[in-house]
Image (cartoon, rainbow, N blue to C red; front, side):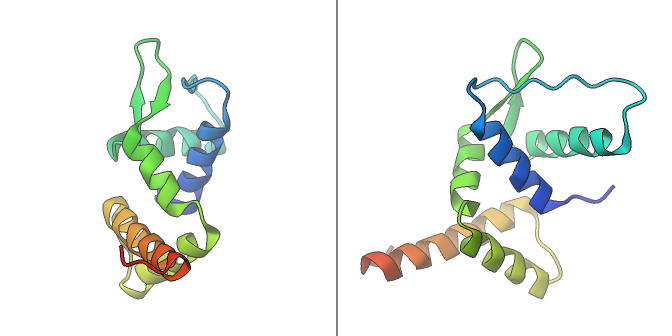
Length: 116
């Protein structure tokens, strides 16, 4: 199964929008393909350190996950980040975060008139 960075971003937005900090997801045998895709991407977010398992079997977004989401929140920054990754043939999540932070800093510098 391929990693879908847009889907990862959507999952992070979904988790952030919840009222509770614990995100519950029950995995069951015989899940539909879309549900297996969702579980796989939740595991990728855990692998990257953006989510972590809680004692009760749920997940919560880590500080690093919040930082990544803040870096890619702007559609402009996200699209520039994806375009840059495509130009080099792809990028790891860590590199996507670095690119997004660079574009976010560039945007902030331009809007605020300060060098970051």
